[in-house]
Image 1: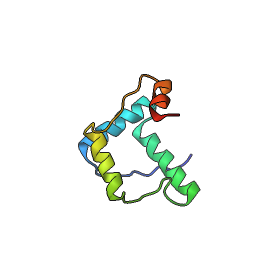
Image 2: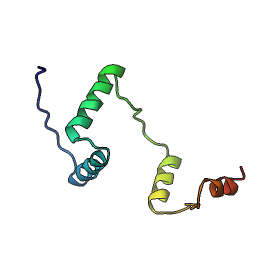
Image 3: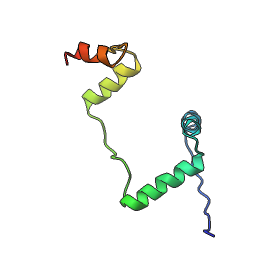
Image 4: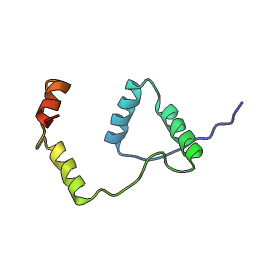
Length: 86
């Protein structure tokens, strides 16, 4: 049987609750998600995603999106493609 090690980490209460809700929707525990992350780091020999500082334009787009600014709602994919001229 594999030995287990305890990990203790601090994070924001709100962030933890939101992320745990996502894991629950996916049918997994926080422990399972952390183990998946660790296995991916081991397999890839690094983080399984890129870590970058967004440029000013990207940051503004994030802010606009969070504020609901400049969003276009579509009934369905066909409506979206029509609005895009595709």
